Amino acid sequence: MIRLLDLQRINATFEPELGRAVARVLASGRYVLGPEVEAFEAEFAAYCGSRHCVGVANGLDALQLILRALDVGPGHEVIVPSHTFIATWLAVSQVGAVPVPVEPDAEGFLIDPAQVEAAITPRTRAVMAVHLYGHAADMAALREITQRRGLQLIEDAAQAHGARDRGRRAGSLGDAAAFSFYPGKNLGALGDGGAITCHDDALALRLRRLRNYGSLEKYRHDSAGINSRLDELQAAILRIKLRRLDADNARRRHQVAIYQRELLGSSLALAPTRAHGEPVWHLMVVQHEGRDRVAAALAGQGVETGIHYPRACHRQGAYANLRTPALPRAEALAARVLSLPVGAHLSDADVVVVARAARLACDMVAA
Ligand SMILES: *Cc1c(COP(=O)(O)O)cnc(C)c1O
Image (cartoon, rainbow, N blue to C red; front, side, top):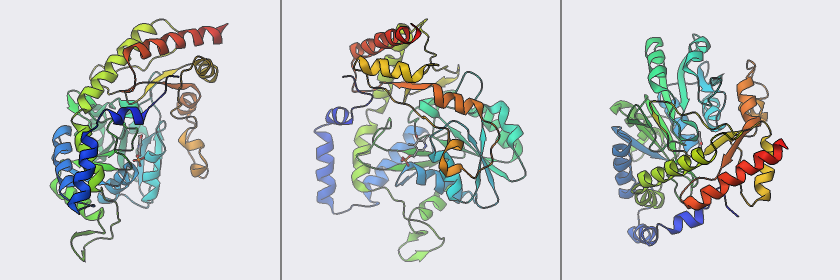
């Protein structure tokens, strides 16, 4: 059986360092917002090429806190991709604003900058770019629009730790960026965790306050903040895993090169890559008309696959009352996408086995 993801196997390769880090935090007596969090924030900001990093409890909170810190709220609209994980939309809803979906272009799955301008209204405050599956959105094109129209540009970088656009890393490309350290992400903790990166000093200070009851000084509350803090244990673990992030991402790229070679000419549509992007392949997503039958044929050959995501956000019960335009691209993607295994739990030989099984699966479906 070749698994889509195997966290136990991946995390075991970080021993004994992870165990030592846990012991160090246990002995320190500091468990929430302490020296490990401060050190991780400095290291991750430097890694992303951003001035500031603020550790928070998870990726959804990171997105929500950015919107709050930028004063986005009731009566406002935020432009979001029609095809994304639902957290992108939920963050907008949580601050009382309305998500306004924009479709990807005909081949891709990232927000199409050419369609953003038509979605802007007097109520629009921000554009949320999602670097989906580890591919950076076209930030230069989005930046041009948001600057000209006086809007904020926010990155949802939860799937893109280390990805680049025109040489610059995700997390340094907009006004602020949200990261998740959910265990399965490219940089994953052993529990929930998240971070916000930004260049602006005043924004970073507002975010530090908001994540901790609106307080920078004990028992003085300058704004109505929330409790969304990163803990020392997760920060210590993330510091160790960060050191290997570039090597892990390079390994993902190598595995994808194998897939690209082995799947050339097959009926699976591979992810398009932009000339100026350097993806980190959080997921290896292919498309096929007969997706469910291909997945079943792969399962029959001992290959586990995933679907990210099987139902478009606007088709979810959570958005039953939201009036959206027709979103045929988002619906087509929900019906067609299939995630093949990628990551540090796989050998090159495993990837070849999966690719050949996928070719066979396509032949079986066609027959
Ligand atoms: C994982 C993810 C999030 C949310 O992160 P959590 O830490 O699970 O809250 C947000 N956006 C995208 C695109 C994600 O993949």
